[in-house]
Amino acid sequence: MSLIWFLIIGIIAGWLAGLIMRGQGFGIVGNMIIGILGALIGGYLFDILNVTAGAGFWGSLGTSVVGAVVFLFLIRLVKNI
Image (cartoon, rainbow, N blue to C red; front, side):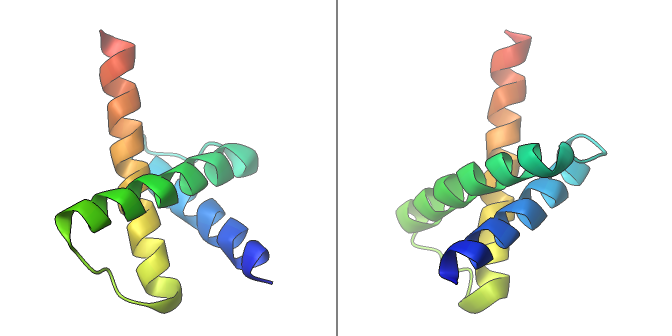
């Protein structure tokens, strides 16, 4: 069941990051990939900075969205070089 929640959070986080950074989503598969990578990046960044986003669904979603926005920002930087 936790895998299903992980995927749901990934889809929502990717969609939100797409809205924040680009103005639209990336489709369900693209949102899921961006959200999952965002969860990994956000968890790593929050661990380095010793920041706690909270527990449960909302904490995981917040961490994933922050990581996904950072991921999309880095992609834009590399793409524009």
